[in-house]
Length: 79
Image (cartoon, rainbow, N blue to C red; front, side):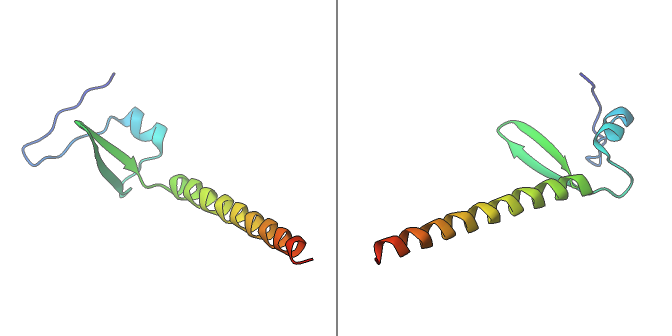
């Protein structure tokens, strides 16, 4: 476990080992989320957006497959 201290201005230093491991560089935007009594910082890096785009791409492929399957089933019913 690594600890840090918040300044009077509400600033927190993220230790360098954590920043390097997560690809956080100067200017990297962070999403701040609350989860119960926890604060979650999600770095919005290129890797984060690539993963998000991959999830969306797979979803579209699955949706297309479902629609194609429904169209085939409908064609069978019309006969």
